[in-house]
Length: 459
Image (cartoon, rainbow, N blue to C red; front, side):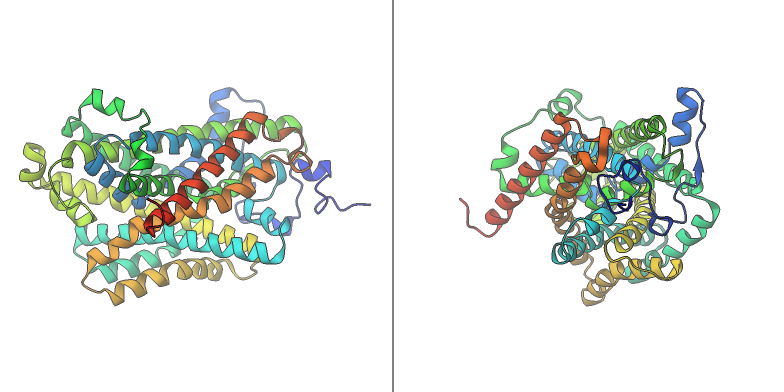
């Protein structure tokens, strides 16, 4: 008799049966109750929450420099990249949620099970590097926000940010819904701060809307392509695919019932799309703010400090300049960094447990995953102490690396969700499978082009 857990053709495996010792994020897996026969809105509210944790990864501090710099340099032209990246994110996160709900395992666990030892090791290393690249933006963003708001030295801010993993341990004791509510509140702060600042900036609406129409210059202009991949990397985060496949399993529903599984997929996807739409609005606002306030001003906007100072300088942004705008910017930066840090740490745990089956106490595990990500940033900060510009240069480069790392998470995701033996009736529809492969191929081609162009090999 075949083992249901290891046999991919088992119907019990198909609808999410899994060994309790192998549950993803075991301490919160299946802990949130959902109503059985409630109406649409009550059911949606029960499933609302994971989407917010996913969405913060799409509006973390790494997006800020790439999006605002994109607006400052190319006005509204890169809004089309923000739109397309958001649509890609929605497709991939829907696949990710479906994978977790149907199989009862996350993307890291399935990758480990279904690849050879060397391939699995390589994918784990790439994914850990992607987590580190993500944390570079989150940690630096939070540390700089603490400096701008409270005057802390950057290295002190980095250490405080590194220690905030302990806050996550406390929050987990309070229940996963509390974490979801806190992150959703931080997202709301970010949204309203930038909406307020953009309204004050009075962007050119017609040109802004035209920015969502694709232009060939995005590919032919090297500088624009570099920022494009930075925006894609900052928007479609590789670690979020692992996170989405795990936290989609936090709801407690009957995994043996096809209708319950279908309902879970439906409402989790709706939640994800709503929250990713908010992330799309925030990223658009960031780029619009950069275009409306800084295009043609010759301002150096490569650093958070530059943006902070520019918002209170009437010679740069005109009559709307005020210390309030600057402080709101710093507050939103701190909210973004902290919310992203919570989800980044969770993703780090998922990846380490899934790929290398790490067995250790929860507090030690979280501390280890955090230290792996934080240590390179602190070393870099010590080496370049006093040279904050050099430290912030890591940001755009880290986001481009995320774009390069994305196919290594995306390809297994599309493969698994297109596997009928694994997914059964919930396998990808033909259109989503084809679209997934087209996106992966285009992204790989653009990455190769960028690398060759950077090395001076292409014309």
